Image (cartoon, helix red, strand yellow):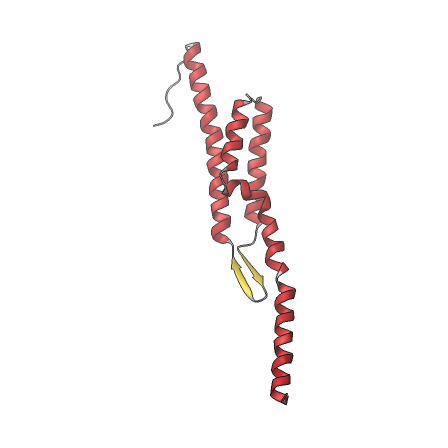
Amino acid sequence: MTENDEEAARLMALTIGAVKENLSGPQIYLQLYAPYLNLLDGLAEKELADFKEQSPSLKEWASYIERLLASKDAVTALRKQVQLNMVALECAPLNNLLMERLEALRHNVLDFHITRSRTHNRRKGIFLPNCDS
C-alpha cells in the first residue's frame, strides 16, 4: 500500500465516521413533527368528525379550539430551515402546510357552530339578518 493509498483510506474512514455520526440528526429532527402527523394523513379530520358526534359541551369545544391554537403556535415556532451538517433541510413548505391544515380545522369548527346556531334559531323562530354578504 502506497502513502497515497493510506491517506485515501484514512480520509474514507474519516468520511464514513462523519456520515454515521450525522445519520441520527435527521431522525431526531423529524420526531419534532410526530405530533402533527395526524394533520398530514387525514386523521385530524376524522378525529374532528368523531368529536362532533360526541355532542361535546361548549367547554370541550373551547378546549379543542385552544389545542388547535396551541398547535399553530408550536408550528410557528418550528424552524424554517435546519442545518444537518452535510444537508440543509428546508422545512418552510411543510410548516406552511401544517398551518393551512390547522386553520382549515379551525374554520370547520366555526362553520359547524354557525350552522348549528342558525338551525337552532330557525327552529325557535329567531330570525337574524344573514351575515354572509
